[in-house]
Image 1: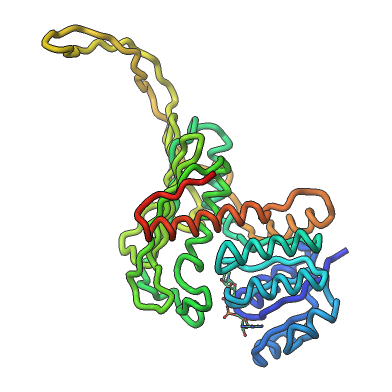
Image 2: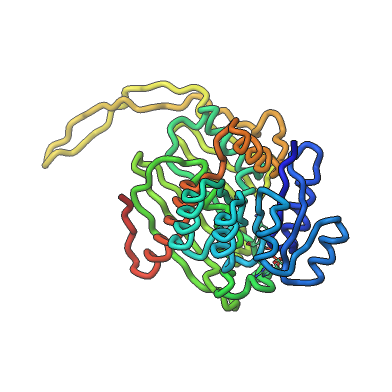
Length: 357
Ligand SMILES: NC(=O)c1ccc[n+]([C@@H]2O[C@H](COP(=O)([O-])OP(=O)(O)OC[C@H]3O[C@@H](n4cnc5c(N)ncnc54)[C@H](O)[C@@H]3O)[C@@H](O)[C@H]2O)c1
C-alpha cells in the first residue's frame, strides 16, 4: 500500500525530483497535495492532479497525506517542520535542514515528543562517488583508515548562487547548498567519535550570503583525520575524494564520479635494515624491521558499475515506516553534522580548534 505525501513547496527540487520519484512504480509513495505561496507553482501542481493550498493551516488540517516533504528556502524549515510534526505527520525536510544547531534540536525534540519520523533529504549519500568509497573501505584493501578527504570544488565564482540562495537570511550560501552534502557524506563514511574540529570560513565572492570558501578538519578519537572543503572558486579542482589507509589509497574524481583509482599493497615483507646512528660523539650501527613493498596492486574500482539512485532514500523511508529497517538519515547523525559545522564556524572566528566531549 502506497503512503501519501504532501509537499510544502513545489519549486525546482520538489516538482523536478521528489514528485517524479514518488510517481515511480517501484517507490511506494503517492503525492496528493501541495502548499506553496506562489500561484504559478500551485497551478503546476494542479496540472499534475494534486490538491493545492495557499496557506499552511488548511494544508495541515487536510490529512490528505501521512508524510510531509519540505522543499522551501531554508529559513522556514524549522518552523514548518515543527508545525507538521505537531499536526501528526512524519517529516522529511530538505537540506540544509536548519539555520542552526538550536533550530535542529527543536525539530528533533518535537519529533520525539510527537513520536513522528523526522529525517533529512541527504540524497548525496547515494551519489556514486560516495558509494564507491564505502564499498572500497568495506572491502578492507585500504587497511586501517588514516585520512579521508572530500571536497566540492567548482569554478563558478558564485555562479551557482542564484535567487534566495544569495541571501544570508534565507540560509543561502555555498556551504549550505553544496558543502553540507560533502560533510554529510564524510560523516556517513566515518562514524567514529569526534575529538576536535578546526575550521576556516571565508568570503571570496559577492553574494550577501558570503562564506563561500569553507575548510573543515576533523580529528577523531581513533586517530583518523577528515578534511572537507567546499568552494565555488576552484579553477583547478582537486579530486572529489582522497582516502588513505595504512595499506593503500583511493582516489575518486568528480561529483557522481563513475570509477575510482585504487592503489594498495599486494605483497610486502619486513626486512632488517641497518643504519648508522649517532649518539653523543660516537657512531654505532642499529637495525630496524622495515616494511618493504614488493608489489603494488593498482586497479579501477568498482569491479561492477554502481547504479546511482537517490530513490534508495525513499525506499529506506518506506522500510523504516513498515518497521523493517533503521532510518538511514537519522536525527542523531544530522545533529552530529550540524555540530561540526557550527564548531567549524566558531573555530574560524577564534583560530582555535573546538574540542568535542
Ligand atoms: N537535496 C538536494 O539535492 C537539493 C537540491 C536542490 C535544492 N535543495 C533544497 O530544497 C529546498 C528548496 O530548494 P529549490 O531549489 O527547490 O528552491 P525553489 O526556489 O526552486 O523552490 C522553493 C519553493 O518554495 C516556495 N516557497 C517559498 N517560501 C514559501 C513559504 N513560506 N511557504 C510555502 N512555499 C514557499 C516557492 O514558491 C517555491 O515554489 C532548499 O532547502 C534547498 O537547499 C536540495
